[in-house]
Length: 289
Image 1 (cartoon, helix red, strand yellow):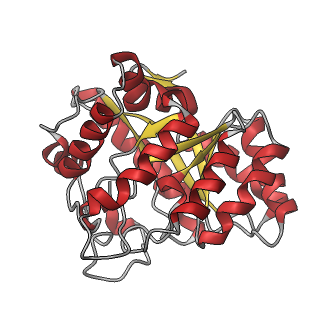
Image 2 (cartoon, helix red, strand yellow):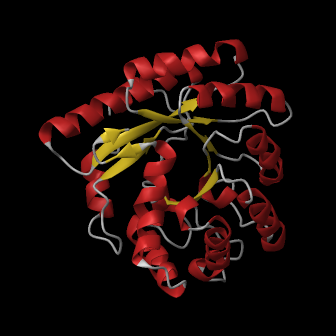
């Protein structure tokens, strides 16, 4: 990735403002408690001017092709683009432009979403659905979790992937009230087109071990959505600043231990760690399906 061409808006000196490479990714993730799947989906960062969203995906596509050419695994299997839905009339054209330069496009993460204008969200979501893509949802405010149900219910054929358990301000935010959050998750899980990413460990009280704080949230999400709709997300490199974990390996260890506590079968583990993501984004080890 040629970071010099991208005008990321993250503050200098933060973990986001760094020229991370595939080599860095391999070093950070292997070995770990979880067996590597052989591929990953590239999630475009949201801290970028909208006029550079297409360029970010084009550069990611070039990197994917480079990795494939040299046989350097794990390979990039798909690309999720950031998006600005404010230009409602031209949103479909934007998606077509992204796909033209990035054939590995498999999903769209519009951020921020105009929650006070659900018609615009639904219009953009229909364009995403029409192109056979998944829609990732990253929340800016915790209250938005309760508003997602109506959007997802209006588009039952659209795969919607809720990021980070529905937490906000990753990394560095506080955990939501568990009872309120659990009720929202239970409600959302009733919609079969909604999936959730197992990522984004937070803690509200620094006197509490982060793993203990996150465990009931993670367990509830898995019980509600089932293994076939839970997607493991290592969230590298952001996880390196995730309070109480601070590395991909620590997060992988936590998830591995949690699956053991839940007595997940090998098939259930395979769904959460690999197949659920492949299904949501329509990717395989051979690329986009």
